[in-house]
View 1 (spheres, protein in one colour):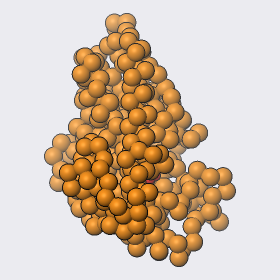
View 2 (cartoon, protein in one colour):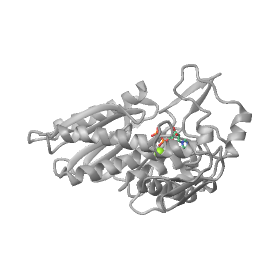
View 3 (cartoon, helix red, strand yellow):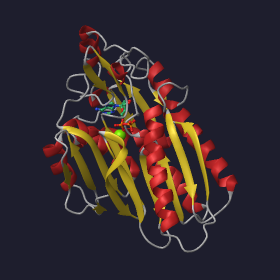
View 4 (tube, helix red, strand yellow):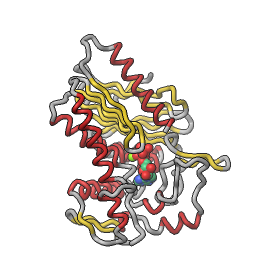
Length: 327
Ligand code: ADP
Ligand code: MG
């Protein structure tokens, strides 16, 4: 949590500096930061001072978190507790599950929303955390896979009583999109949503681009790049975000669905820039698992989607259309 606070703080400091430096007119904006979605969330509205909108944003985040978290009693919590029985969920939940399944297909299973039996075994937040027993991981892996989740209309079903759904790799993106939609409907034309590094830049900033700093995975006080854009999502997945060290080995929270263990790739982080945050979130997680080469070619095959890869050897690789500057 401390790390995430820093990550969020860096982005914020950077943005505040750029907006102070680059701003001629006085800003009428409001900003609120809070803990939600298991991370630090901030909402900044630049063209209104209406704090009631901030109240509503945080209320909506909480409502959607309950709906989608595997640790709450909303749709996903109920699905995981249903032991294979069919369940009716909200149309939005069914839609998100369908999209998550299509990402499993698109990424050859690198993104797997049915990884819950495995993610349940890992506790990355506990003090003195230890990796789960190999047998337990193996048994849990046998309960995963997109084929075990069935969605038809608003009826969803897990085809194994021990199967489960974990939307942790896609929910923040989905919530960012919905929040942006809500704010647009309220007439907001310039806002920045930061759901723990899952950033959405709504509209334009002082009539131009937003500038979003991408953290150096090796140094929380530095940036590796500054992405520029408007009405876009900028999502980063990295091994530095959450994890623990046990017997000299680092275990992080992005798991390889093929092994049930932290993905071992040539990457430290992946940033995906896309119109929709739900896509960016799923893709950033998937690309981290796939590694640089496969990740680059996946992103290159998708329209309006760009990415920046930071590799373990310290180099940067960006897709052709990425708009960014070096710090
Ligand atoms: P963050 O939550 O830090 O933004 P990600 O979007 O990459 O990072 O999501 C990681 C979370 O997604 C994990 O905490 C876990 O709940 C879930 N997860 C882990 N590995 C995968 C995977 N290969 N596919 C789908 N979800 C995953
Ligand atoms: Mg993700």
